Length: 248
Image 1 (cartoon, rainbow, N blue to C red):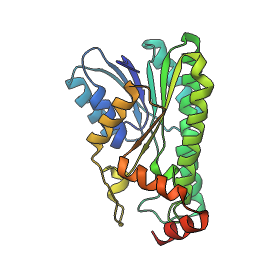
Image 2 (image 1 turned 90 degrees about the vertical axis):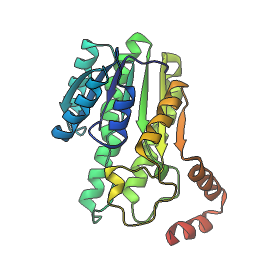
Image 3 (image 1 turned 30 degrees about the vertical axis):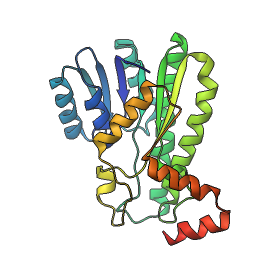
């Protein structure tokens, strides 16, 4: 969507969500921001207000479907939403993997997205207008990494759901885009102990996303080098790809 005026972003207290909020912030823009860290969220709000935007914030856990739905509907009632970005997510970086944490990853990365998307759909269908963005990952495109099965699977589910949703809602006047970043310099990746190829700044990632959304791209996957390598990997016989990923 070109020139959205009322924008809602989950996971806006850091990383890509923070960068998007700051890049969209300017006079005439209304930002509805939520995150789990009140102090960081307040800092983002101040930065956006200094750029001329009107900002409303609340601390929410996207796992709480009822509370999130109530907030989204309230923000839409205040200023009709043009763009909703379901960005909140976690990874298992720096955390020892176990069953409980794997379930937490699915709950936030997948069901947190659903908890954001469904209220937005209901609102936007009434107006036949709006854009919904689902944050997936390059990890959702490739053969799952053994060090992060829950993360890869949750992001793959988001990607598949978003792509199907785009076609389902096409006739409703709602644009749907799926974003699949590679390695981005954020608090999530800061703790990674392994090499991260084609590591990109969060500022550059935000600009790529905004340009893609403005042109209503269905899949915004970057950087292109990693996307190309993953395309090659998907062409290989499954057994070869399995061995390569296991070696990585």
